[in-house]
Image 1 (tube, one colour):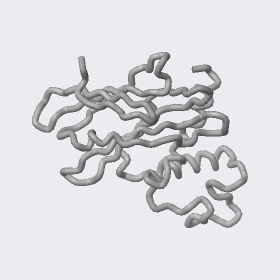
Image 2: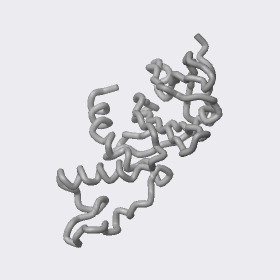
Image 3: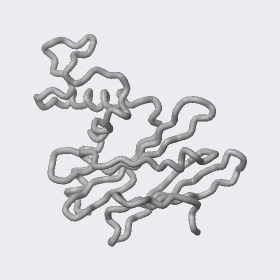
Image 4: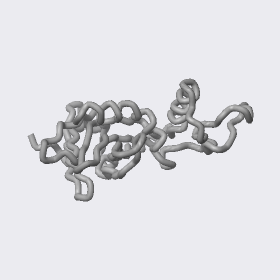
Amino acid sequence: MPRPVISKIAGVLAASLLLAGPALAQDAPTPAEPQAGASAAEPQAGAAAAPSGGQAAGQYAAAVESLSPLVQDVQVVGPWTDGDQSGVWRTVMVQPAGDDAKPHFFIQQLDASGHDGLSLRSTAEITEIATLDGQIVGYRADDPGEAQTNSLSLFFEFVPADGEISETYELHFTPGQPYIFGPASN
């Protein structure tokens, strides 16, 4: 990936949390609503005027604070390209409360093409992860091949509830096609 694209992605990655959407947000005032203790003279997060350094830091802190406590893990796992469009893959793991709660795992494609910042291109849940009996203790992305620049391969380390030896599962995901998820083949 060319260096300017990587720099652009790195520069706006923190702002991607702002684009996570209402599914990941808690009850928080909308950007146009004044927050408690804020004076009318202070610009609000999301106001039309560009924020100064301190205001930008406040916007990013507000984005992090607005994440649901159910969100247990958010990672950028690699770049993607599709013709003249490019961006990054992001994973989000949501863990409901309760002893029998199962994690829900989502893949998001964030687009960094032709605009200022990242935008959400797609979100897909990998439903099989919620059916596993055990715990995901880590995962990593595999580098895509040159012919598969718009696909994602992840390898999960999973510890079954009734065992001590971890197992490896693999996911192969390409937008618009059925994904493949199951025990690793090697």
